[in-house]
Image (tube, rainbow, N blue to C red; front, side, top):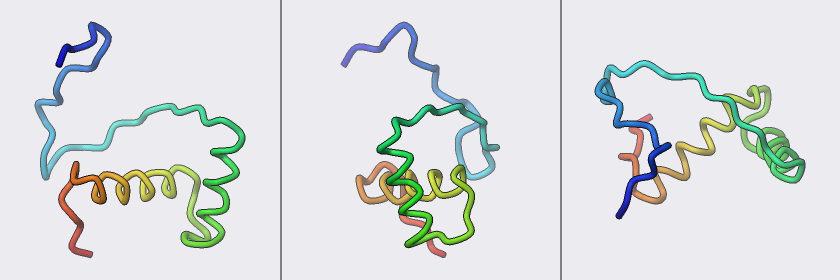
Length: 71
């Protein structure tokens, strides 16, 4: 596999004590609608940022990229 010259380097602080980084994401209108439905159905009262983080965590766990959480 080749690495893109624009790909971020590995995070040397990644791990249990790594701090969260802020990112900016633009979503197409249909994805925003889906995110809002997710919030309404599964994460009532959650911000879009927190809901998107939860959805990404679920996806990463399902794909095996992240160990399942214990909570």
